Image (cartoon, rainbow, N blue to C red; front, side, top):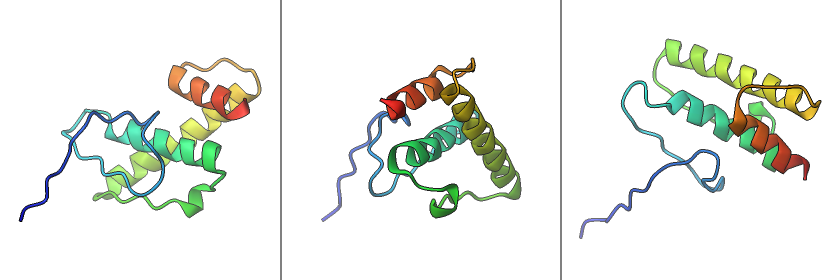
Length: 100
């Protein structure tokens, strides 16, 4: 018997955070952005530190890009929490929801 896999549209801002999330897509589709949003959500919503989150990617370049993006998102979230303007509406929304 083969297992039926139910694929659905992926939204990093709303996908449930329990269990695992697999993001598989072509180059330039926003995978790194989505992973960084998931990490930010885990930090904001579940009070995890980045050191407690396992992320797997396959090249040193991808690791470097992901690390840079996560640092940027955390800095932007901090700025938003201080009432400073940021350009990413998704990060702003996540911070606003976390503060409520």
